[in-house]
Image (cartoon, rainbow, N blue to C red; front, side):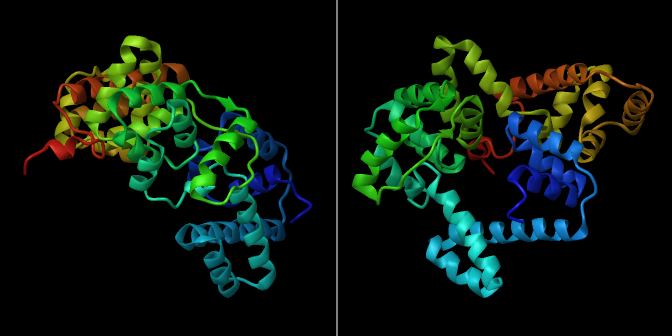
Length: 334
């Protein structure tokens, strides 16, 4: 559908898949993109079956191309796509993914091993390292961050958190300097990266001791930044990562009215996890409170959820509970 712009295609795709999946997609978009796509959805009339099929087919082809390319590079992807799709679909998918790769800063670093990349950049200026980490996948960025000296970790994180939009000429200059020693130079375009969200995602993937050292280092210089990072690192739905014993410890410190309000917008999975760690009578009372509560302000729900998140983080800091995937398992003796 070359005559249809990308925003309209995105809107059609979101209307084609189920609502839960569409919501998961929207969560991962920037606020500006969410607003733009939502506006398109709201103004969209009837979508023909052929349009749905064409958009979904294009999405599938591009996703398949991206997967193949990640597994073995562009040439590998081309070979597999030509076998999996029609010639026209394969060519279109390859073109889309090739353009995406060519407009991603530091794309030549994507397939480098984290250990080798760490050796390659660890002596660079913190601002250069911050620029690189902000443009590579969070998992790889976290692995590199863990390997840096503690003082440089703090400097790098501080720069990523305060990074918003970087002049494309600066990105190109830094990339060319690195590419000259490591790979072919790839021309780049303007890119927005970094920010507090990037730091939170990286620290979520780091081990607990690394996270604690970085946060303590930042605390003395910028306590507001530390609080912003903390609030993004663990959100209400992440309570699913707390084991049953930990859930029970958290519930001891939460008033029923706060819990009822917080669960108002919670997923069914999280509600069930919390209810199974309560007595049957207590769970029934909470369910009834939620049922008869009526309309509530989103800000009130978020405030109640934040109170519970604060309790979870305090109990984790004191070692009373463990959050799966946050490094605590490494400190356990079985």
